[in-house]
Length: 256
Image 1 (cartoon, rainbow, N blue to C red):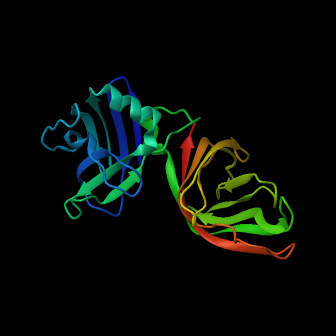
Image 2 (cartoon, rainbow, N blue to C red; image 1 turned 30 degrees about the horizontal axis):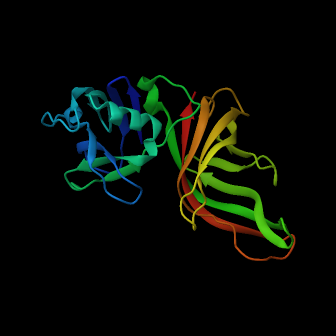
């Protein structure tokens, strides 16, 4: 998991990793989804590599501890700084290791819309992936006549045994409930298509609906990313029929 902040000519990074070796390099690249792009911000100096300059990036200061790293570099390219703030989805981060010199972990940047947190606490935010989940659809009257499948609910278990569903079937309001009783509901801020066979990625504003202490008690925003599957069946259907379509996704819970 990685967070990036741009303020003035400073670009800060906070990254945590698991299941891979210690990074040998960490970069931000610019490129369309599914393509490789050139290095635009080089964080190599934060992990003890030789001082490098890429597009005006200079060695900064930071700390590496265990399986996490935080730090800041200076970037002099004003156009690049502006693009990082206004169009983050055109960039991706790439973490390299000795075993995977071409990149061990790669992830596209996404804008955080409503949540506000001290960047020093960035790694207190967390990600939970779908362990088992279905998007649930019901055959209902369609605009223009006939019947088609429309969203009725979702039923999923995320990492950490977070339960994910709608507040009530057909309510359109998603909720996430942790084992400790903390819970949030979500309201969609934006949708981003992720291919015809995958449900869209989402940015949602979170509202507290459970206990005031616990895993989700400080959540202010939720990102649904890296979606796979879950698309409603196409074509006509029999009124009242209900189907569950398996899906996968990563949810990022961001504190306010």
